[in-house]
Amino acid sequence: PDTFSFGLILKTIANSGVPSSAEHAEAILQRMEESFGVKPRERHYLGVIRAYSRVRQRDVTDPRKAEAILQKMKERYFENKSVKPNTAIYSACISAYGGSKEYNSPLKVMELFEELQGLYDETGDEDFKPDSMMYASVLDAISKSKTGKKAIKGGDSSLRLA
Image (cartoon, rainbow, N blue to C red; front, side, top):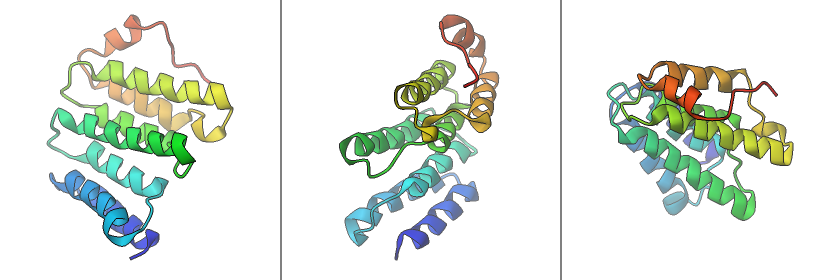
């Protein structure tokens, strides 16, 4: 199998909505490199993160697992620039927190947004520039939470248009 094949498999799994799809997608991502020597690209990580954001019966840990995938990407990016955690990746991770039962999910959403905004401010790289999908993901995730107002009132940041 090649990167294209794995991309199709991960996308299909992410869109399936099967409760165990996220875990299966993550296992495939891990096996890509370990068993087949295929280096995951941005779209592969995105497929796994989207799988965690689309699971119908979400566990409190699902958003954290999506964020852990993002963290792995960031580590790889800062080590050797092999994969870049772009705006689409951050939006998918933020969507995983939307509707989460985790109490502090709106705060995590704002934290992720501010991290991406900081990367854009620091580098000027357009791949880090928040776009309309990012803003929609942030607003949607916060609006689904009972504690969403705290995320907006509690921080000194705002959703500024770049």
